[in-house]
Length: 162
Length: 391
Image (tube, rainbow over all chains, first blue to last red; front, top):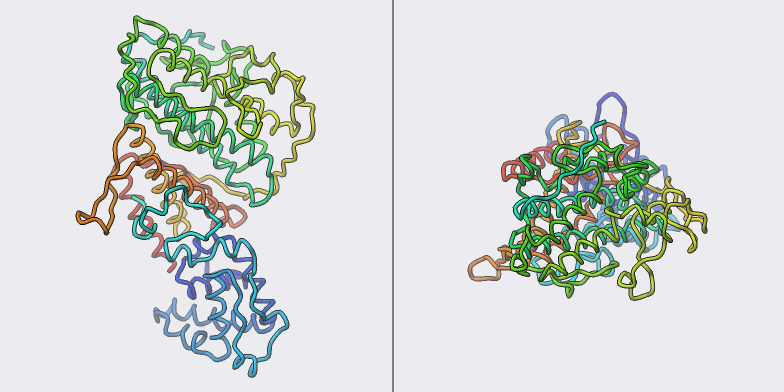
């Protein structure tokens, strides 16, 4: 990404998702879920709060990158933060499972909540594209069929391409 | 314009080489159609997707049919370059691909579903590849102006007892019709001259080698063998793609040469991923996007290898940690089928991924077959490097 133009909020969201999931930019884009999950985040915590999360995340990631801090800036700024940590955890679950898990009571007591913040499946595609299947070398049951008899093969992770 | 008459096939060696190239020719159209098929956004363009998919299924059948004929004559299908009339020709194409064997089809390019893509499909499947007269098509030295003429030459050779004796048909290593296949037509096991000709006729009937006389016959009339279980009747690839091109169905009384005038076939060219083909080492797409493209090529390479391994009757040694030796022998055909499903998922994912330097476009699978171990190592190594670039 060039240094001249500042990244768009969605680009920061993608970058934040890369950091949270351990999957790279192309793998996340390949799920086709970036737009949907960006919208989900905004629905769950509101635009103002999402803006703050993205700002802190972006600054921390920049710092990690430019000063070669290897995640030591990101972790305290986002993961260990009482304000952003629980949101980050819900985002990780969202990417892996295609489902939004509501923010914990402790978080709500401190930072409030929105009416939409309830447990729900975000979309059918989200289930099919859940990162959990790739991470486990498996496939979503009822979606992305891997072919007759494929159950006799070891998981794809143990059996990489040539 | 040179009017060279295509040469007849002169002996068994040449027939075998021609059949090797026929297997490759059938393979070469599949990525062209698949790129368009997989570019269609989920849940849209149902009819267009069904049409393209049905043709791809039959191209796979044709590839297996050509391989059965070749195997029956005692030759194993192979990806290695073939010497055909003094030219070294590789059966597996690199895109964009201009066939040195059949000049009429022109360049095969990988494009998302678009009017240009559909125009090229119609050109590939037209008996004279869009020309009114095959004499207008330049005939390459040692090659053929049209796919129809190429298969005519193969048929003439298979009919000739001078070129192949009855005892030359061994019936070896046949892919059997009992393997699951959900498309129109049936796999023919080639045990003698009659079944060999039936196999080639099946390829020609459904597909690209369509004789020009068919243009004067009803577009939707076909042989009974090509009826699917649920009643759908196969009709020629040309007629199916003409329907896509014009956005209209043929009426049952129309001939294939007419312009379809039946009900509308709804094609939405906007509900398509804006994938843009960039050839290997063309515009360097680094980063995780470049790695994803390389990994697709590696998956495609493995798939092609598995298909050819299955056709050559070999077993595949795969790693299995549960076996005492750590290795296990497997039938490569089901492995290839699993590879096809995996390839689809990869292709769909690529076509959702924006190209960083041109975010309005998305990645397009290259279907690059890495022929040598060196090529494969290079793909693997650069993938690893590129992935590291933005982590």
